[in-house]
Amino acid sequence: MTNTAGFARSSVTAQSWETYVEDGRETGEIHWLVQAEEGQVSGLWRIGPEEGAEFPYKPAARDTFHVIEGEAELETPDGEKIELVAGGIYSFPAGFTGTWRTRSSFVKFFVVA
Image 1 (cartoon, rainbow, N blue to C red):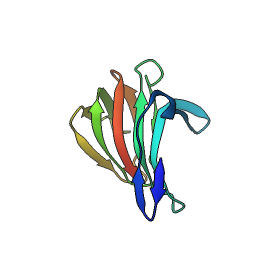
Image 2: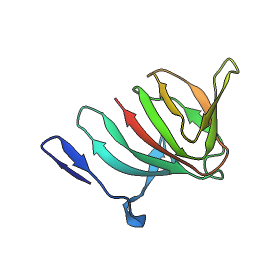
Image 3: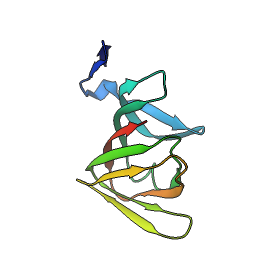
Image 4: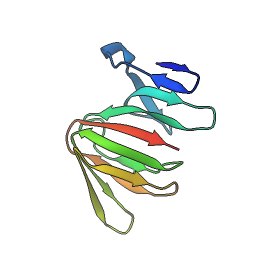
C-alpha cells in the first residue's frame, strides 16, 4: 500500500492479505487500501463459506461495499433477509445489526467512513 499526499495505491498479491480479526474472532482476510487516523478505512475483504458461515454484522460506521465475487445473506433482527450478490452495491449505516451468512467464497471492495 502506498499513501502519499492523500493518494492511495495498492496491488493485490498472495502475500498482501492479512487475517482480519473483529471482536476477537478471525473473520476472513483483508487487503488494506486506506487506514486513516480518523477511522476511515477501505480495501478488499474476502472470506470462504466455511469460516464465514455465520457471525454478527454490526458496522461501527457506514459500511458501503461492492460485491466482486460470491454470495452472502444478511438477516436483520426482525427476520428480513438481504441477499448480497456479485455486482451488487450496498450501504449499511452505523448501528445496523444483522447476522451474516456466507453462501460461497466472497470478495468485496469496501469503504467504511
